Picture 1: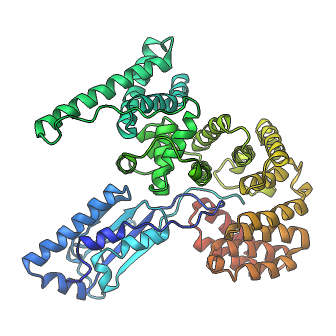
Picture 2 (picture 1 turned 90 degrees about the vertical axis):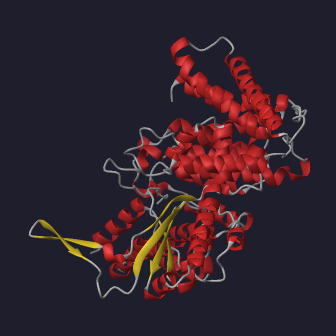
Picture 3 (picture 1 turned 60 degrees about the vertical axis):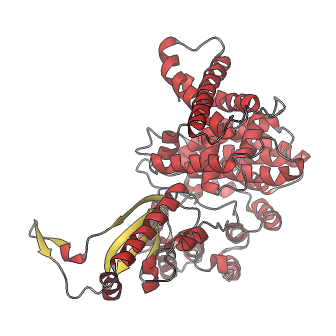
Length: 151
Length: 399
C-alpha cells in the first residue's frame, strides 16, 4: 500500500498556494483529473487484504469529504473494470458494439474527478493525493470554457 | 432583473450589516438575512413592497436570527455542553461604510479566491446560492459548500478591521470584484437567459464601494475600466456567436454613455490620485474607446501607458500586451524581436497568447505559412472555445 495513504496526506493537501494575481488573468477554469489503471495497479488492488482495501476506500472517502468541504469537488466517479467496456462504432449507419476486454489496451480509465479549484497548481496538488498517482498514471487536464478574451 | 430583485440586492448588505451590529456572528446573521430575502422575494411581488422595505427585512431577519439562537440554545442545553449560551454580543461599528466593511470581511485573507468571490456575491451582492452557481456554471451544492465553509472560517472574526491592514485588504476586494467582472465578460450569448449578468453585478458593487470611497483613485479606476470594457460588449460577439476582434468591431454599437462616464471617471482619477494598475488599464481602454476607427487608435499613447503599467504592476500578460502596442508603433519585424525577448520569460514560454501574437505579427509581415502554423499552435493551447474558433478561422483563411 502506498505510504501516502492516510489522512495526513489529505491535510497537507489543504495548504493553499495563492498564485500571484495577474490583473489580466483569464476566467475561472475547471479541471478534470483522469485516473488510469494498468496491470500493475490492478494487481496491487487485487492483492490487498480486506483491511488494506477498507483503508484504501476510507482514504478516498476522506479525500472526497475534504474536497466537498472546500467546495472544490464537482463530481468524481470510479469506473467499472474494463471487462465491462463496450466499444461502439457506426458501420453503414448502424451502431455496432464490441465487448471487451481489449488485449491491446495496457492502460484503462479507472475513474475521474471534476474539480473547480483555484489554479492548475492546486489541481495538480489534489491529483497528487490520489493513491494511483504512485503508479504514475494520473493526469490533470483543464476544461475548456466559453469565456472570450479581448482580441 | 425585476424591480423587487434589484431592491433586495441593494438592501442586502445594509440589512446584513445592521444585523451583525445588533447580534454579532456574521455566519448566523447571513443565514437569517438570506431567509428574509427569500421571504421578501416570495411575498413582495404578490402583496406589494412594504412602506419601509429595509425595516421589514431587518425585522424579519432579526426574528429568524432570534429563532435560530433559541433553538441553538435549546439544543445546547439538551446536550448539556454549555450551561448558558453566549448572549448576543453586538460589536460597535459605525453605521456608515456598511458595504465596505462587508466587502473587506468577505475578502478575508483566510479564504481562497473562489470562496471570496462566492461569499461576496451572496453577502454583499444579495444573490442566492442558485444564482451564483448558474453564473459560474457549477452545481449549486458546490457553491453552497464553498459559502458555508467560508462562513465557518470567518466565525469569530472581528467585523471591524484594523486600520493597518486596510490597504492590502482593499486590494483583495478590488481583485475579487474584477474577477467577478471578467467571469461575466464571456462570449456566450445563448443559454444565458437564466444567468445573472456578472458584469452588471460587478459594476453595481464597485459603484457602491465608490460611494463610500469617493477619493480612492483605484476604486474609480476599476469602475472606469469596467464601464469602458462593458461599453464594447454589444460589438464583441457576432450574430453567430463568434468573437469579433477590437479592430473589426462596429464602433457605432459601443455604449456611448458608458464610454463618457468611464472617460470622465478616469480623467478625474488620474488628475487627483496616485496612479495605480486599474487606472492605467482604464486609461488604455479609454484610448481604444475614444478612437473613431481602429486606424485612429493612438498606439503611441497606449505603449506609453503599458510602459508605466509594466513598472507599477508587472506581469506576463502586461508584458505581452505591451508587445502588441510596441508592434503597432514600430512595425511587425520590431514587434517579433520584442516578442522573442518576452517569450523568454518562463511564465510566458508555453502560453498560447504568445503564439497568437506571433501569428498576427507574422501575418502582417507577409509570412502566411509561419502565421498559419502559429495560429494553429495557439488554437491547440487555448482554454477558450470562442478564442479557439477565432484562431482556427484565422489559420484557415491563410490555408
